[in-house]
Image (cartoon, rainbow, N blue to C red; front, side, top):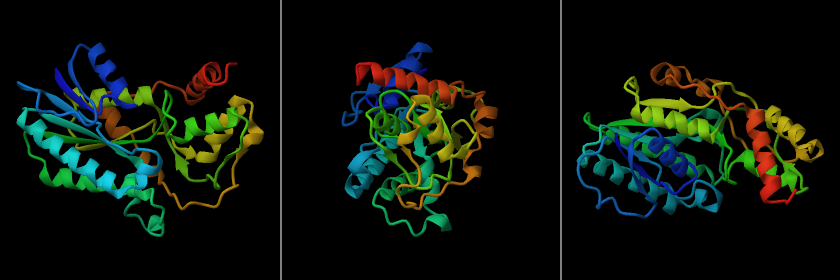
Length: 279
């Protein structure tokens, strides 16, 4: 297949390009900020990963986040013009919090990122045309690889440097998926003939309280004393277990996650110690 990946220089994008090429697809890699005008001929699929400010202070910058929404909508228009039959756009599990009663009191500026993703999802549903289907892939909590922007990577970097990683009560359910498994799911959503639905949750589908994951990280790292559960006030984050249902993804694509959480964390510990701490 002829496949376009925007945001190809990012955490997920780099891995997605490699996975698609390994499967024999022709891939046009478009970095954030690059123009799509140079693309010619007909293409089959576009993956839109172009999104600035997934982590850090820019998550709270509404100008940046609204610009991301516009870019995604513009890219969809290009996908239609290039003949793409499918437009795969990753979302975030946090977008589900936008309209639930438990989270109406959240005033954190970082919530702007989740709101922007939810807004884009609604707008794409409004402008989508039949000849170019939008496939929305709500990503669970990713970890692994070289991203310091997620909670698992941050926790490991913190405790392995000898500092206390502080958390709230950490009682809400979480469902972590290794980035390599998430990439495999995205490949299937973009290329499988069996995809019929318009939106999917991408994760392991085995949620448990966040504190259980954190305790496991402390155990594996030998740093239990540095896992500071309850040292921060509750930030209001609320997830619901029904959000983590992967049945539809598995039935329509044949996907199943293969990376065990403990194995994935141990790989990260080994790499952190080798590269960052010289151990």
